Image 1 (cartoon, rainbow, N blue to C red):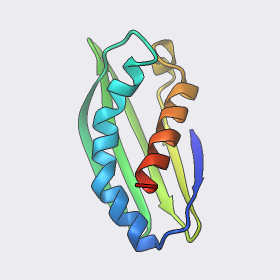
Image 2: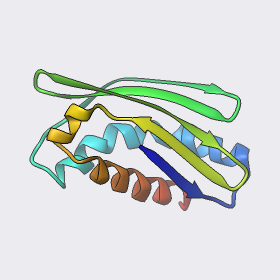
Image 3: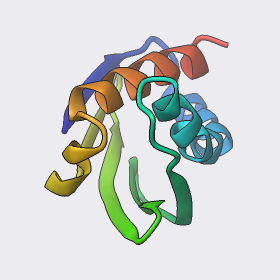
Image 4: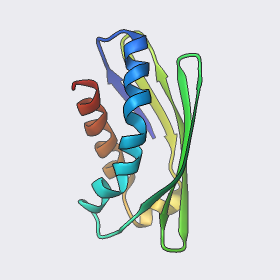
Length: 114
């Protein structure tokens, strides 16, 4: 999954926003997905670390006995945010990647424009 969002803020400001809001977005992702599907997913084990202007992240979405590891990075550039993530193919049986992309884009837009 590859997403690009443009911004007009300072890099330090974007990093602060992401530090403050990303966990909330990840934790709320199952609620957002449930509005579009019948599945009740849960988030487990969020891991994040910064390397310069790139945030490396991973977390697990679980559904009953299924665990889906999501991982990727968010790179902050002067005028854009680039998110590259890897979703397990098996997750598509429960929720389409396009739905997840749209939810992330919409919520990132809201976070950045608070």
